[in-house]
Length: 210
Image (cartoon, rainbow, N blue to C red; front, side):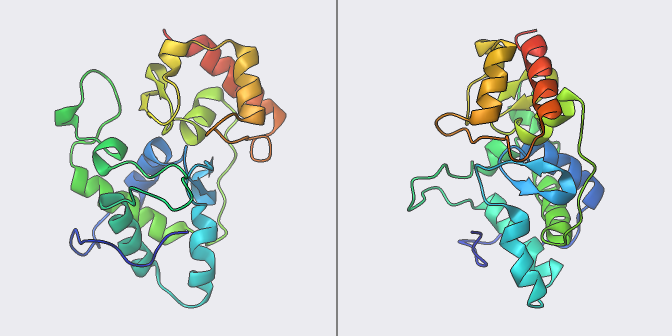
C-alpha cells in the first residue's frame, strides 16, 4: 500500500514526459511493480493499479498521484513492519550516469527522470488501461525482472536478486524459478503464460555472462 503522504519534499512535480517516464518505469521499476499500462508484473512492491484505483474512483486526481509517486521515489520507505523488501534509494533506482561505470542503466538528469516516472505513473495507474503483452524474451525480462537482477545484455542493474551474469543459470533453472519462485523471488506463473516463461528462460540462459 502506498501512503498518500511523504516524509520530505522534493518540490512540486508538474513537468514530466509520459513517454520517457514509461520507458524509465519499465527499465527501473517494472521488475518490482505491476502496472497494466506498462505491461509489467513485478510482485516485490505494491501493485500500482490496485494502489491507486480506489482513490481514482473516489475522485482523487492524477496530479495528486504524481506527487505521491515522486515523493516515494525520492524518499522511499527504508523499513517495513512486515519485513518485506524495501524500495531502494533513488540513487539505486535511477542512478546518475556520473556515478555509473560501463554500460549499466543510468539517467543523465535524476530529478527529471523522477518527474517523468511520477507523471507517467500518476496518469495511468488504476485506469484499467493495459499494454500489449510482450513475447520476446528480452522485453519480458526487462519489464518483469530487470529491476531485481543485473544482466548486461538487457542493460539492467538490479541488486535485489542474484547477478545473472555471474550466476549464468541454465534454461531449466530459469523456467523453474520464474514459474515457482524461491525465497524473495515471487512466482510469475499467474502473470506470464507458458510461452512467455519459455521465451524469457531462453533469453536469460543464452545472454547471461556474455
